[in-house]
Length: 148
Image 1 (tube, rainbow, N blue to C red):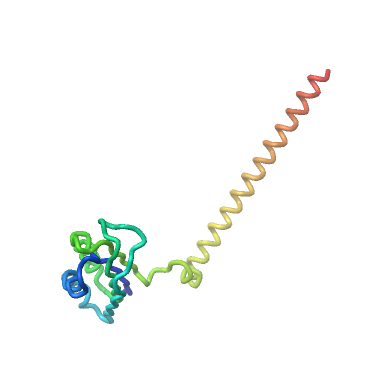
Image 2: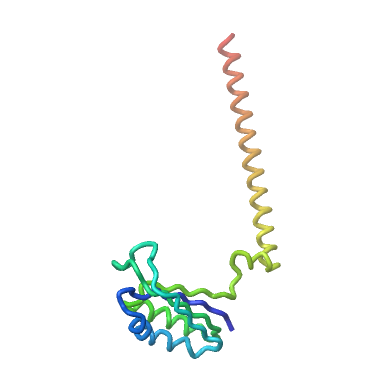
C-alpha cells in the first residue's frame, strides 16, 4: 500500500462544473481506493502559459493505492485528455528531502558517498600541489640557465 498525491491542472476557460465532469473518467480510476480525498484548490493564474492558457483549475487528490497499474492507467489517460494541461503524481511513501535523513540506510549511503568525495578532493589537491611544485622548480631551473 502506497500513499499518492495527484495534482491536476485543468483548462481554465471551463466553468467549475464542466471541469469536474470532464475529468470524471480519470477520477473513476482512482476513487475506488481507500482514504480517497478530493480538494478543489480553485482557479489560479499559472506561472507560465501552457497551451495558450494563463489560468487553470487546480485539483488535488490524495489516496492510498495497492494497485500500481491504476496509477499507470491514470497517467496514460491524463496525457490523452486534452482538457488536462498538466498532471503530477507523487508517491508520498518514498524518502525524499527531509524524510531521507530519518532513514538509516540512506544516511549510511550518504556518508559513504561523502567519504569518497572527500578522498577524491584530497587526491586532486595533492596532484595539483605536485604539479605546481614541478612548475615552480622548472621555472627556477630556467632562470638559472638564463643567468649563466
